[in-house]
Image 1 (spheres, helix red, strand yellow):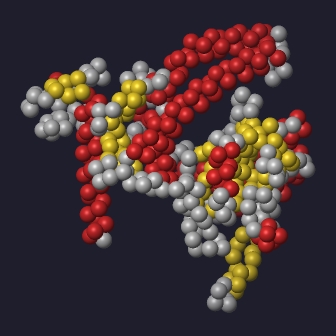
Image 2 (cartoon, rainbow, N blue to C red):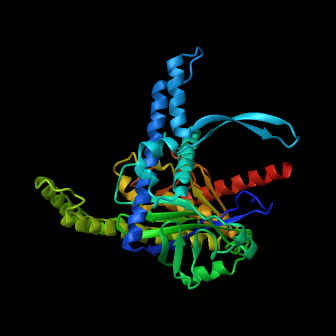
Image 3 (cartoon, rainbow, N blue to C red):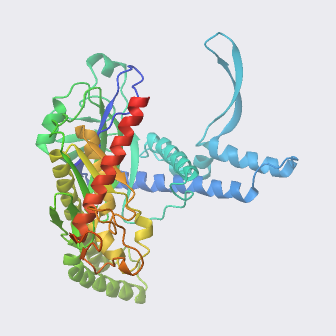
Length: 466
C-alpha cells in the first residue's frame, strides 16, 4: 500500500536543494513476542500523551500569571512546569559574532514521569516514542491556536493504536551512503524483512512494483516510522521517505483547453463540466444490512458477557464477533478509498486544471437526513486526494465557493430566488429568462468551471503585476 502524498518540503540541513517526501505503507507480520513489545509502546505512548494533557489541565485551573506575584501560586505553576518540561536551568550560548548570552531552558523532561511511573523504564520501550509524543502534543496545541481543532484531549484505550519512532543514520552510514538498507530502521538484503528499534526483524509485505521504483531513486532515506495496529488485529508500518529526487515523474500537459469543473453530489458521486457522470458506488449502503446484523449479534454477546460478570477483553465469543464487525467496516473503508484514488488519478491524469467546489463537511453533516449518505460517499477525502495528486504530478487543482452555482443559469447568468429557488428534489429546470433547459448537476459544474477560470485569470494578472 502507498500514500499518494508527494510534496516539496523544507530544504535539507545538509543541502539547499528541496527534499521530496513520499509515504510507503507496509503490511507487517510480527511474532507473538514482537506483538507484546508493540502493545507496550502503544500503551506507553497513549499514557504519556494523557499525562501531558493532564498537566495542561492543571495549568489551566491555576490560570495565567497575575500582574501581582502570589508566592504559593507561582511555586505551584513552576512545579507543574518542572514535572512536564524538566528543571529550569540557565545556559551560556555563544553567538555567531562571538558574544555570550544567557538563555533559560529546561532539562530532564522524562525524569518526573519515569520516577512516578517506574514501568515506563521498561527496556522494551523505544526512547524515540516519547520524543514523538512530545512533538505531537506540541503540534496539537499549535493547531488549536490556529483554530483548526479543539484543545488536546485524553486518548482513550481502544483495540487500535499506534506509536512513532525515527530512523537515525550514523557516521558509518553516511560514509557508505544513506539508503533503505542502513540506519536504525532498514530492510534486510532479501527485502522481505524490516528491522525496527526494540522490536527487531519483522516480516513485511508490499507492492514489488512500487519497491522497484523507489530503489531506482538515489539518496532515499527513511524519516519518521509509524507502527500501527488496526481494530481488525492487523499491523502496518508507515515509512516517511525523503530524497532530493522526485519519487514520481511529472505528467505531460494535456493541452490549453484541458480544464474541467466538478460538481459533487449525493445521488451521483460527481458530474463534471463535460457532462460525464460518475455513479455513487454506495459501499456502506451495500454492506449496511450485513453490518447491522453483525452489530446486533455483537450487542447480544456483550449483554450476555456483562450479565455473567465477565470482562469483554476475555470474552472469546464477543471478541470473535468484534473482529467480524471490524473486518466488515474495514472492507467498506478500503473499497471507498480505492474508488476515490482511481477517480482522482483519472481526473488529474487527463486534465491540466481541475476545479471543484469547497465543501464544509461539518456544516453538511448537521443535516441528519443527509449525514449518512455524505459520510458514505467520502467527498472530503476525494478533494484531499485531488490536491495531493495534482501537486505530485505537476497539475493545478483549486476549489471555489459554491454559492449560487446550482441556482444560476450558466447561459444568461439569471439567479433563481424566492419561489423559483430549486430544492433537492428538483433535478432538472428551465431558465425563465433565456428558456434553456438545464440538468441541475451539469449546470452547476459549468458554473464552477466558469468561477475557476475567472479565479485563474485573476491570479495570473496578479503575478504579472507583481
